[in-house]
Length: 214
Image 1 (cartoon, rainbow, N blue to C red):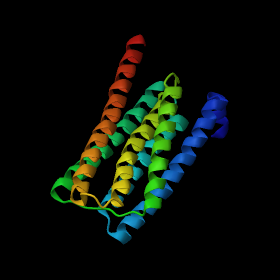
Image 2 (image 1 turned 180 degrees about the vertical axis):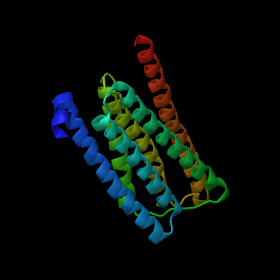
Image 3 (image 1 turned 60 degrees about the horizontal axis):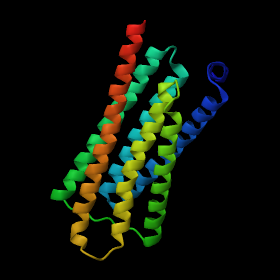
Image 4 (image 1 turned 60 degrees about the vertical axis):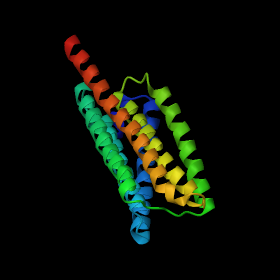
């Protein structure tokens, strides 16, 4: 398999595959940790965040599988399309949970150190992923672009956790925190959904153009 990949892709693409694989594995570990923590602390938000992480891991795995297994561009397009569908589905579920906060308020509690760490990581991840999308926008392999878009959507959802963490150690107007978290969740969930929809329309357009040229 490695020989096949080496023969089809250049050093930059091989490095991107390795980094994406490492990132997906790290996300899986983080997701499991969040799920365990959510169950122990009975925090529905943490569990939902973990499930979203799992969804993004699956979407990345599909994209990576397409890079390794797809025999032609048409097969790559199908893997890209499936990744976009999973991204949209996970984001819509996240929106549904965020909207639920208005009728079932829930307040999460984090220490100031944990909150600052989460916020720093989220903003750093957002910047890195935006840079990655820009760098890969001209890559001829759509699935590398899919991975970057998935990372970007995941980073937007991280901002929801960031706000939740920051508000958790604020003792001012705590009754408004669930609504504030609900609104940011809906906004970022919609943004992530739009990224997924953009992926779907983009690959359909490319696929149609490819078929017309053929």
